[in-house]
Picture 1 (cartoon, one colour):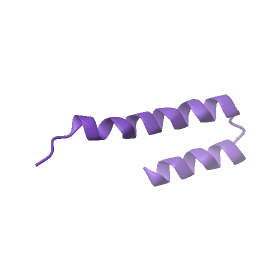
Picture 2 (cartoon, helix red, strand yellow; picture 1 turned 90 degrees about the horizontal axis):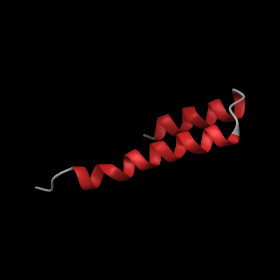
Picture 3 (cartoon, rainbow, N blue to C red; picture 1 turned 135 degrees about the vertical axis):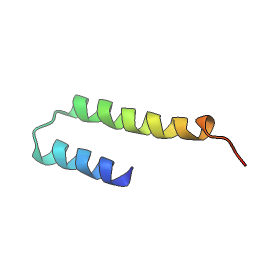
Length: 43
């Protein structure tokens, strides 16, 4: 996930993405990462 966030940051800082879009996309990435532990089984 680290590279996805770096790519998003680059798009925000260099590609003209507005702050609201950046925050929404970042929250979507963080939310999907937060879902992983509850959707995986422990062995």
